[in-house]
Amino acid sequence: MSEPGPVQLTELPLEALIACHECDLLMRKPQLADGECAQCPRCGYELYSHRHHVIRRSLALVCAALLLYIPANFLPLMQLNLLGQTREDTIWSGVLGLYDSGMQSIALLVFLCSMAVPLLKLLCQFFVLLSIRFNWGRSYGLLLYRIYHHMRDWGMLEVYLMGVLVSIVKLGDIAELSLGFGLLCFVALLFVQVWLEVTMEAHQIWSALSGEDSHAGD
Image (cartoon, rainbow, N blue to C red; front, top):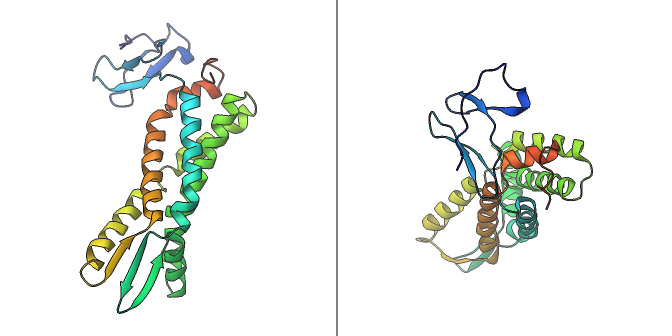
């Protein structure tokens, strides 16, 4: 664990400095080995860390998330049996149901937050990692990574999952429910995306895209 010391602005070039996101302390950017992290000496905030094989691990996770995306959205989340009638519900059928019920704006919002934006985020991450791994299209990688950061707050799979769980609890008293394979894939997709967010260290990605970290693609 490394704690960089404060410096005068005139002592070092800008690329050798870093500011704490919490207390705005300006300090010298430390050089980290694998597994180390840098902390602010004033407030203790973790500035960034250097993870092992971050590109390979992130590529594996983003590929797993893309494979889970189709079954999570188009396979049944649950099967509802009420008064002798059986119905299977998926995320896509929920969007269509809202649209057919005259709630087009809500259907569009659900589609964007639960399907479109999460897929676009994964595709951005995938192509950013490929540009680093194979050392091509770094300028496009920088653009896609900026787009990804702007979309981070719009992908709300965890909110949709909470809605599904609330529906299961409420409908369980009036109908016979059985969980579908799509729900398992949806939960797995959510956990893989959280794991990917933790693994894909932003500081290393920015450094690799700008050419500062030549070993990030290893």
